[in-house]
Image (tube, rainbow, N blue to C red):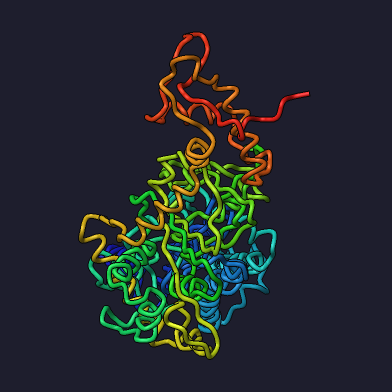
Length: 545
């Protein structure tokens, strides 16, 4: 009966110890320590997992350790997991050895013996084999503790900790799977409902904003005033920008668009705007190299490292700014980044390729928008131009020219804790409205107008046809072979538009564009491409030779 009671008591102790308490790590039972001794390094690994589940994890894809800080997972760049083995795992064995040693000392004192000083034959003769085994067990426990302070064993144990099922190892795809959740400095917010809850390590989120969440009703008067100034009180545009900011907070990419913050003059508030976004988005924000979005005029090495793409993983907003006057958008790059398809890439120091669907929405801030093939309707459907017409200068006011005095303390005010929390609440309210409305984000009239004007200005072929070509009925020989028309177009681009050779649309692109022009009619012969149009004499290409 006594043995059965002891067995039940041990099982109850094991069960209780496996329940993690609110105030600290689980209690490791003597039975678990005995099993760990039997399993050697694997046993050490199992104890580490019991102790540190939810506190440490290992990303096998990145080959990186993470530790949980109470709201999110951080890369363990300080290698705290090494010291956890030495300072928290090794003492478990020492504590057990100490308990066995105390029991041994009591026995020796009661019976007037010293096991360490006795010969083996005397131990056997006196029937003290079990007591001697206790001493040996104590010594083995102390030896194990000492071994766990050796770097070689620590590395082997940690390798087992991050490997296989029921370990602390991740495959790398577990991160940030909650597109409507936003981790803040003190809580986690549901962007659909605006409600907050305590983050859990099992959410596996390694991104956060540094801003404290103070509730949905937190106010940001300085930010509201700033928006009213830069957008000239345009309520429709301000409402659009709020819902847009909410969308940027999410991990959704259903709206396959990208946005240009454009102002014809400097000091127009664009910089303040995107820096204000960066301050509330924290890790979810990244700076994008402008070259990533531009046509480089040559094909890159598709198998080479692309750290610029790797850096977009898990980010929700990427901002690029300014470019050279001759810059041209890469439609292929923007389609790749906004199309919702997986992107394969690898980092500079990695031999393994990863694949991910980007959550990163693209924002381009510039005083001059790069060029693009104007006839590309797919690009037009993606682009949204948000205008910043006003200019803010020190001590100058001229409302007719949209010039207003600069507030030199504005950004300092915008970065106060109250304003940051209020601006975050403002963006979350925008997200709630957007998600509650089925992710509908129709652009306001001013954005449609600016986008259309920009795309019309980019329609090189259309401008060439209007300026240099006369549309005919095709009768009486008034027709032109497409190759001759392209020669005129190419000369016009270089001379009239000062375009570098590499940016002039190719013959194929030109021919495809003409096919989609309803005002142009193709005429015979069938085996050659002629159009019912003639190039005006002053725009004929120079004779070769």
